[in-house]
Amino acid sequence: MADKHPILLVDDEPEILFSLRGLLRREFDLHTAQSGAEALEILKKIPIHVIMTDQRMPEMTGVELLRRARGESPEAIRIVFTGYADIKSVVDAINHGQIYRYLTKPWDPDELSAMLHEACEQYERMTERRRLLLDMRDHLSRCQSANDLVARVDQALAEKLTPDG
Image 1: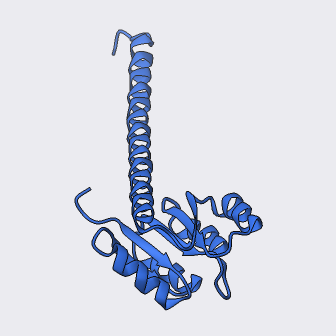
Image 2: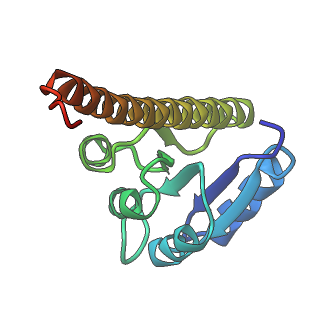
């Protein structure tokens, strides 16, 4: 893909978003939000390929955001990052947010960039698979229509022709 992948970064700490933007802006088309509600508004307006959100935020956790984001952008790859590695949030993220990865703060810049590129590749694989399945459904639908037409012709051929016909 020639264009940069659009990534939504969500964290209630502006310094974290500033740091991430400085690190990633050359490689990705970055969008930022400081809350889950703001992130959901962005998802309504902009097609996003990867959502990376902090887990612990006021009013809406990262897992809750990702669960709700599935309604707005079901094909987006979802990543949770946090400075708190409690096992319950990891399990919730996996079970309810259907996340791609779980990342702890502080992150290694090279590993973060590589993980985001992998997530973008996963997005491309998933969207290509969806496109192929839609093409197959369309082809099968056309085949079924052709089969229906052949059946009607066969039925017409099978009918006894009257001398007047």
